[in-house]
Length: 350
Image (cartoon, rainbow, N blue to C red; front, top):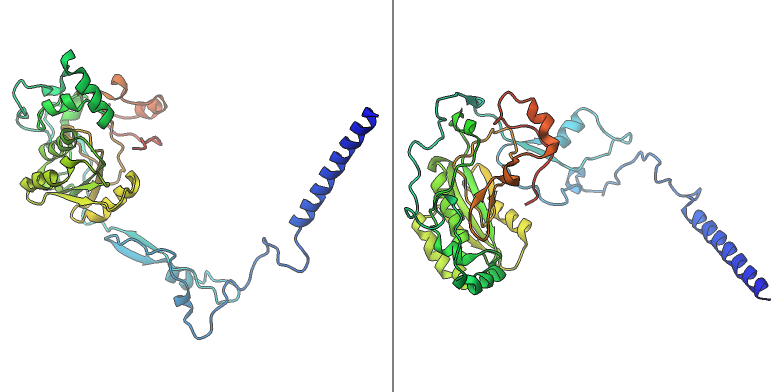
């Protein structure tokens, strides 16, 4: 009896599965009286009587305004007869925006033994001579600060006790390849707007970022620094910050989000608020600008992100000195000089 019941149950399961597949197949099979989804349509547009066809097709979202020349792709397609067979196809208007070349840029030139034209002519003055963290040397606190250090790390993610003791204008060690110092660049570089997004950032790490950008960027190329406060609630980031940045007479601007937007949306807001620079540069709120950064106008650069120890504030090369990934070794080998840029499909998502 048990054998018969088991056999009947298995038979019903098989029959049910077969019927289910049959119903599914019949549902997905197109009917003879309805259009095939893959059939070519002749009349692509059903025009509304009394309205201009071009007015019926607007971009789904407004195109961002970018300085340059706009090319109407719709007009180009219609001019060359790229139309539907019915003749009433109107392509949604699209625009390609590009900036025209105003002059030709010269490529960087390596002149061995001749210091590069963007290299500092004098040694950088220290923030506090012989002070904590100068030259990006490790700054180690004694055991009496243990509780305070742990509390600051829990609150901000870094050892803010040590950071607050280090000068906002401290010097950092130059860990570039020696060859980097002898590159000569076209001095007609575009101006930049530096966008920095922060949320409840520690005071000294945020301000050291701003100080380093101003200190190590040629003034003629730094149009503005745009700070985006992503809905912080720390007291030191309110009135104190607003008063502090006044010392730069409008070079540093502060905008506050009315709600928490997140990093990427806040950076997009920063792009809208940045109106003076020709190039946008995004930086984290807890970094320090290096000695020199010059780029080619035709390249989207991916910088080497060296490591600042969040406890001792020493500066170490990316990946402990191995400044490239193993995937790039073949591309690197083709370069004429060690410090030339190379093509890569890798980029940090930060």
